[in-house]
Length: 366
Image 1 (tube, rainbow, N blue to C red):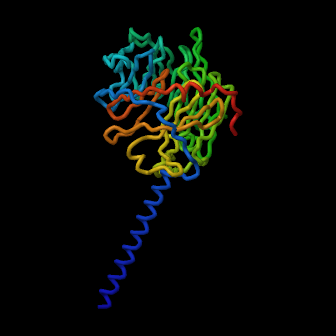
Image 2 (cartoon, rainbow, N blue to C red):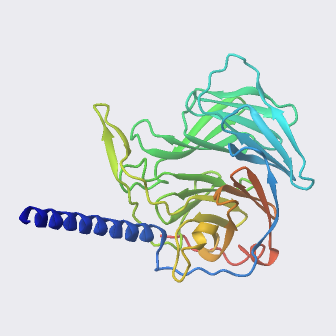
Image 3 (tube, helix red, strand yellow):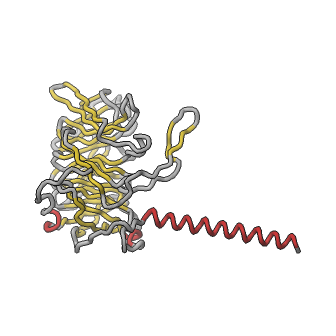
């Protein structure tokens, strides 16, 4: 009888402990997605869905535009492009080809910047360039600079994020090519480390469609940067979230000392797009009085006027068959989102977006 009582007490203690762990976990999960310190504004219909187009696979990514033509690269078939006419909804497949058939590559990314397209691999490293329509890629830059992210900002300049050879920290920079001469310009002051200068500054390279303004959106803190195309003028802007310090657990692996994330990070900004004077940032964090059920139905996009250093408003991009937005971009008056194997096309409402940036230039953020 005494033994049975002990077992009952032990089982009761274990059940209570498990219950407390579950409660704490659910509470922490709610905190991951909620921040009662900010309030969003949701005006009626800033974007209006035009249509969804089935593209067959979820391995496509946005490679660029040429007027009404959207180009999609493919992560599993790196030399393949899908051309989508946004007016007619017609699609066609393009097979890219390098001049050299002996080219070795590991992580190819294609970017279309009319009248050229670029094929880039920062791990080898190389950048190929070719003319749209001909689709033959010639060697443009090779072995001048390693990089882990890159986007072209004009026909002879590439905006990159790389690892600095001395500090081993992530650094933003530019690769210029003029009359055959290659120049790599780095600025170690742009990305501000809080922990290690690598994981804690991880984020997205963005630019406006004209390439006049560059941006960098941190994943794990409430901040993004806007920079001019020469890296000389910098503005730092806070998002409406309040997480200013990254929340990461970093661990070292074995004798190599290689660092990894020991736990999933808290994302503040998932993906983003830039156009004219506004920055659109996708967030998975709920503000005050927002329903948690909405995160099961839609992704939240917050709109900022970076010329005024202000938050403007927010809107929803609804999921398709429970699949969330992977990435999105803006071209003229359209917003294009990739959701699973669908291209979702939205019309942007003039009265909300064309008025942004019309006021006096804002102050530099702290």
